[in-house]
Image (cartoon, rainbow, N blue to C red; front, side):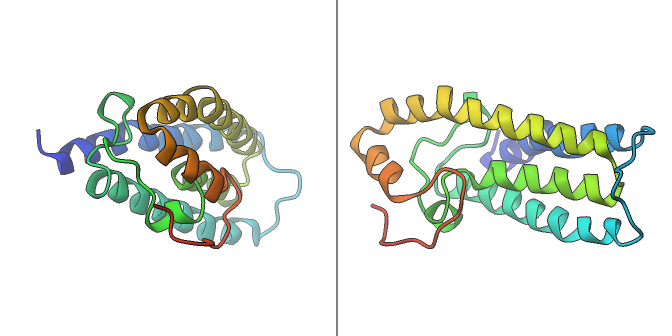
Length: 163
């Protein structure tokens, strides 16, 4: 199967469910945000758009720079360090959480906000316990240098070119 088709399928499967279908289903319950106003939905759109853009750009980077997809069984074979990955180590996860929070605002859904917090926590645990150890083993000193140069969650302007 061509890489573009694998990347598209994995996008629909993983972020499509986590950041699309599940928040939509949660949002249409009866548990509204206590601080919602008429402007709250309009605040959600920028987060949804930025989160979706981050997701698209990082999936593209995984495919074209890394030679893989976001699926663990079809992961990139090259350490992706360019583009958004120069600013923060996990822009894909940040994009997913931003899109979910945006949907929580769009639909004034407290349940979606709680879900976003749970997803953020799950992403952190996955990164610390699984992804970073695997990448450390797979890429060795190259990944160690990347860890020192690029923050895990809070984007920072790149100091120098990561090699």
